Image (cartoon, rainbow, N blue to C red; front, side, top):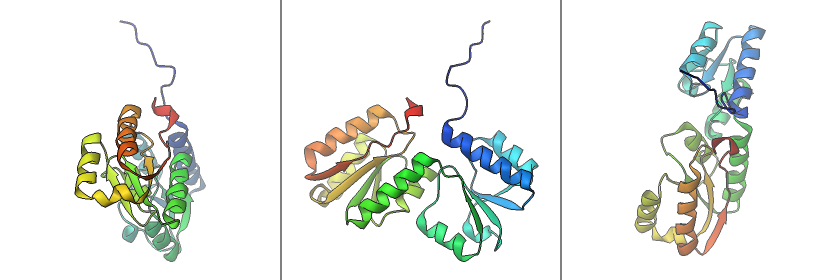
Length: 198
């Protein structure tokens, strides 16, 4: 049997960066925690735990003044502010591509636009993106998008800015965009799917 490894096997740049930051923090010997799993990889979580970096699931579990490593998926603005208020030393390992989406939705939201995220509402990246804007809607498929637009037809007449979960499927995003182009009158599209995913 022949085993071949894909040319692109391994971590993407955002995950690789997050792991390096966490390993550096562990090597410094400063007590620290990650807010949620650093990445979707139990082996990495176990490796970090063995180096003294423990995982917590909420800001409230973070001891005041502790170093906190923000997971690669990022966190919302409210969580970030709570950590600052607790005097935490924040090491932000948010993927640069995801952080860019945070800046985009914040700016678009500040202009009064509603944000539509094409992605999985239960995914921590999507929750974090939604946490950087005032009004966010989420749909993970063309069917759910159509249902959303039927339930909230006013969305089609509003200023609407659309982003995608970075790990979203290109075909799914394009179908959703085509639906929106037919129905929405004030639409801005941001293709935020990471190039590593295709």
